[in-house]
Image (cartoon, rainbow, N blue to C red; front, side):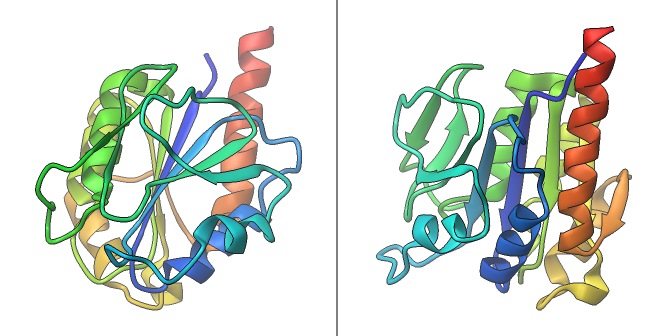
Length: 195
């Protein structure tokens, strides 16, 4: 049984942390990734272009009802919640912000846990709120893998500390090591499935 999906949540400091994590994934990493990065409702950034420089995977903003494909990194668009609707599709929502954030990390993680059960890896990175804690707990409750950035390496330690306080986790590491571990976990589970 292989991991089939990776969800990443970040806020303050996430631009660099996500880029570092992506840059340490294997070039042939096939498991789709979705990222909820807190950002302004009308962003002055192009996260897809920025993060594309860090990875050979295809990086793009997610769209409503867009198919989920391997070898892709999908970014929650500004001012929308990103949800995993099924194993094949994303959905976007304009429901109210969660912990003052839209996109919300918890919304993405909880929907991924519901759809992918124990085949999802959740990653909480640097940030200045508790968003992601409940979602990571939902992933663990369904048997998924929980990874958290070492608070000592985070630009803002509040988010990873909140995640560590909310549930037991599999690994606490710097973003570069998280990328390597995600690659190894996906490869190990894939190898196990092929036997």
